[in-house]
Image (cartoon, rainbow, N blue to C red; front, side, top):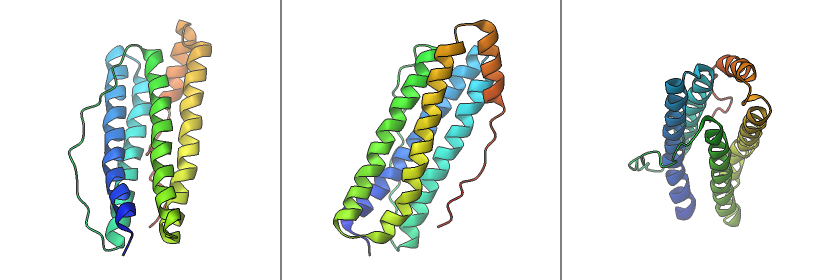
Amino acid sequence: MLDKKVVELLNSQVNKEFYSAYLYLDFSNYYHDLGLEGFGNWYRVQAQEERDHAMLFMQYLLNNGEKVELEAIEKPNIKITSAKAVLSEGLEHEHYVTGLINSIYDAAYSVKDFRTMQFLDWFVKEQGEEETNAENLVRKFALFGDDPKGLYMLDSELGARVYTAPSLVI
Ligand code: FEO
């Protein structure tokens, strides 16, 4: 049996991760619409990763004999203003998600739930990587995005990203 508060936060994280997938699909569609297929691909792959995160949280609850309550997924609520601004919004969203993961960790720590802490370790590391990736996108766009050739090259680079299943087995 897991602590009630920890379960509540883990259950809510299932929804937050699905929301992240939704948000990134929205970003992806925006880029596809602009003709920036590579950016669109990058965010579509990111959406697949977010869906995986949701499934991992869900499976962890099931593995521990807890019920999962699926909530409605909110409509993406970030207003997209430009190809450049999307990237900063993405970075900000990852900071927000890191905060959520830290809060669950904090709740698990306070009740000495070492199993959940160990499960969350992977997400702590993953968030570090995702923040770095998002920062790199912001930086690269600032460097090359205003030049058509630079943007074309960047779009080609991002088009090469392929989906791989998460390394975490629970
Ligand atoms: Fe699943 Fe990007 O946080």
